[in-house]
Image (cartoon, rainbow over all chains, first blue to last red; front, side):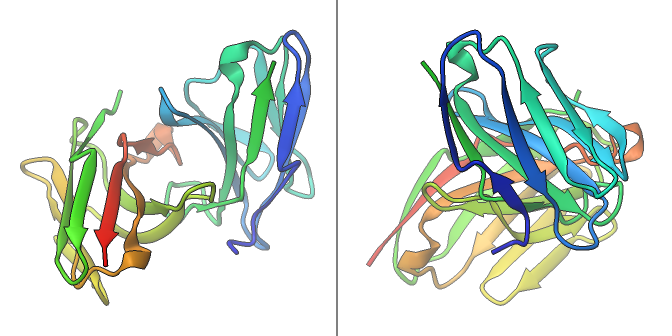
Length: 113
Length: 114
């Protein structure tokens, strides 16, 4: 157990819908990262927040957005969902702003039908 | 941007043998190279990492080597056990304005046969 928690574990929704994924970092960690894992794209970095502020952005679609709240938990919002958005979404956390020692949560499996 | 290539895509060994997985990266500014192990349906788990000021790091049966000149790094697992069977991912990060962004390789499926 990494200490990073994610909810829900599974999510099944229809195309065009909007969902919110939630992540709580390890105690003391200030950075939260979101990754998408799919069979064809592998593990892709989406976005990083550090202490409430966006720090780095990867291949995140405009339909996706995220935020980190004062209590350091983070939410990833996915809207106008398409079949191709079906994937595992992982959250990771680390203490500092850099990439060092990122610990992953259990993931949310999103299925868009 | 950074590109990380990982080889082989699958690796099959007998229990007790050694396994080596290799990665190359494109951005010479990259300075942090972690390795993750992912079992089926589970989260990626950090198993070892190396920073660019070090050429080799070892932790029990696993070791990582880094060649900055050639821009490649490798994971070595000795005395493999069936529980080492998993998908292994290498990654690279360059810090700076990229902050915590990790670029991952495509993964290696390691199977250790008893």
